[in-house]
Image (cartoon, rainbow, N blue to C red; front, side, top):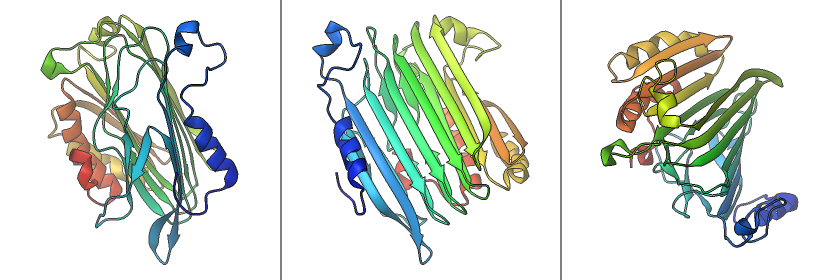
Length: 297
């Protein structure tokens, strides 16, 4: 745990989240014998004389946050030193961007969700963008292995003149190794509010025979990789044509729509590399700057 200006209650919360041996209420006997991985990151960024700085940083358990030197603003690299998640592991990130501050959060590599014999892995993200602020949430893809169980939630609150760019990609197995996800359980929940009003809400649920579900034309047409891009900003609708043109040269199936200050892009691909190509083509257009250097590591 490190940083300046950390409130005592936040320190206590972060410390509690690092306790990986305490049994959870309702846990099965088998769960009590296991040491599960937990991690948390708490971050606040504020602007001072036109420069964005982290004024409060807390990390616990298996989560780490680093700020590599960059030429285009404040970039945070999130790491999971546990090497992957499975069987009831829990991770959380809370990030606040103050007035007129800017922050980009990403990961230097893919997250992995391994097979579970019952317990569900939980990943929770809470984002807040205050007046005139900008936050880009750009983790690299999450890889689900066969029989993985994942419940992921993203909650965001954006000021009326704030900007939020969120990118999340999922990869069902590693195609280069001939892996597929025959069975599993996924719940991916997004809730975004602007000025306190709910403006975007969706929940993706896939459970049981995931490979069969993904093979349906109405789901993924046999593709094993998917991504969602959400851009909340006053100029969102003005960006849609540029985004569509950028996607024309990418080997993905994609659709982009914009309305009421929202821009949403859905992408499908056979390989994660094709999703990354699309991200490299589109994300800088919306960020107004290059991707972090470590994004392509």
